[in-house]
Length: 399
View 1 (cartoon, one colour):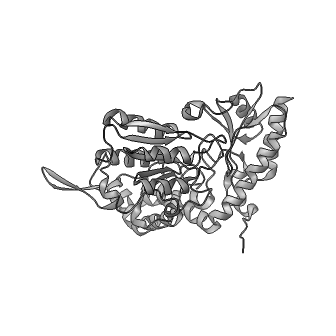
View 2 (view 1 turned 90 degrees about the vertical axis):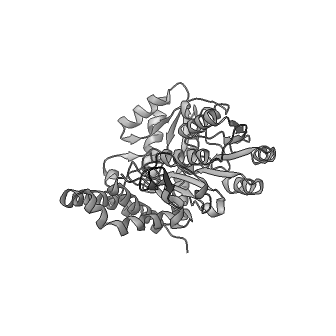
View 3 (view 1 turned 180 degrees about the vertical axis):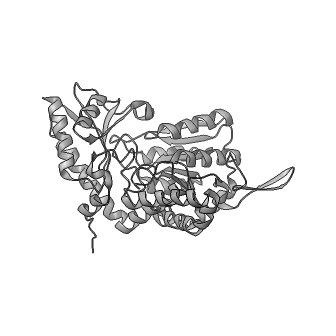
């Protein structure tokens, strides 16, 4: 039996829905009232008991957040770590691979054209300091990763890593990441997945995808707090990674000259973490799991397709998403109107959208009509009326 989302109930449980038409969920979604309450309640607890004491009293609940995150990703609890952001998770895993000896001079680091700037900058730094090189995998005509080109590059040998993107920040297309995973497994190449824009709006099963590492954020489609992220590392790989920035929670100080990294994803743990935010992230994840990711994906995808159709019907508007499978990110430009002006006009009408700046996706600038774009990203709590208001704003700018 197909589940449906009670949109009115979700809106009633989302305080921000009463004040703004929020179509910037690919940036940061509106948190629910329960998520907000979880965070505030723990901050009150810290003020009443002390930070350490409050954290000790909710240790079991923090452990439960890891279990919820593992369910969300199709992983084991010992394969998941809570982090401060997607970028922090990515940096620790990437440098963990390099410092663990997994990247050598002359080896290739493969990356797709949807790569986000913070991930690609990390690859550039690692390549610079290890002597590895970066090879960019071409895209197909519709903008998605070319599996044929990926197979050819993997077959060339001397590849240390394939760093691929599930959903790009600047396009609403979905890359064939499971098929890419099969190719990486056959070639015996480590596979990192950027799931920052997919976790929370699409089902993401790391076992089905076949990735060795996956990173995500809490603030986007999961509707969690800012300053939270998720890191998945496949069992067996973690022992080969030596992440930077270790402390006592990540390593054991045996004596004056020796230390041991803790087992599995414990080696990625930070001692100083925002406990209230992590608990709130758990509330947000549990809510997404209760609704069902297939149900969320259907609702979000339907709203996005309607918005694409309505925008495309306007003269002078070009939608840039491409791809065969699409998701909740809708990117477009308006002839004769700079993206920032569209965002300002929308804000004046009580609609939140954003600019996807070209500097964030330089590898994809060969696509048709390169440059910055307006990005609208509806979530399941948005309504068709809210989409229509944005379309009205754009139409007025044209007219």
